[in-house]
Length: 404
Image (cartoon, rainbow, N blue to C red; front, side, top):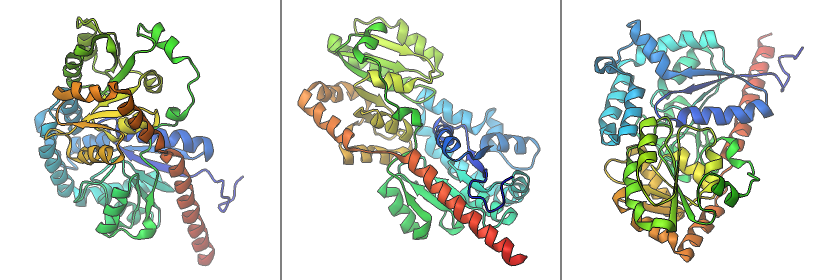
């Protein structure tokens, strides 16, 4: 039996996540995949969307989305799927208002929740809730570390990701996010910078198959420039515009469309008549395989899909305009700064961006810049978390010995 001071003790790690978009759960699954293998932690999940819906049903918190007939995360996913991202600033204001309105009740509710859960470490991969959740944790289990992992390349203050008065650990994937944490007053020893965003370790595994042969097997040309078009787990009708605009390249280009759970979109793309070769895939866990078949990426500037594409050595084409999600606009600036792709004002201009990739010298420059990146965040973070756990465990053991 392990003693209380055994550094190999199986710690209980609680991860706070949600269902708006796919990035929060993707980050959780990525961290868990490495941590369970290396450290053997026991994971618990706190799904804020499920908990808030349950609390609202019990009239313990106020939830304005009930009047609309669906949940906040369902609205977010519908916005993405339908291209209604211009609604996001309004939804962001409503979210912040609801968090503030329910703050005191939430702290009391989650104080009891943490008593029941008894975590050794709490990791949040969710914005907005970190102030109240951290406060409730310290009331229930003083000195239990609370770690916020930004799943965006930068924060969108105020009161989105970084909460300096909580004394939480803040893990940042870019220098921009580190600068924001410092400017907001987070203590230097509580700021941790990684080499990028967290993505699943399967994106780092070597794919041994013959790419040309696999393309042929799936009905594609073996040596044609290949773009992969992806808009997260719910797809987007923007993919139809992209397909139409890129037909002008004929046999010079072929496309792989990953449509996620959007079956209607997948069927429409499959039924579109075109002389251009294409492969249309519905929801799949094999995203690394299809990225392996591609030469470049087209999609929204989400931090997860961008990071996945870059780890798979794909230059990117993304859009930035008034409809771009506010918290993803910096991502497009980062793409330009790193010179790892092309940022366009609208996918109506997608043909101009692809023309740059069809020029071998230009494309080689982008590929070289992508190859220079070295994002190992998912492996770095688990090491940092282990250090935080070990430090906290040592402190608690010392306090127990003093009390005796």
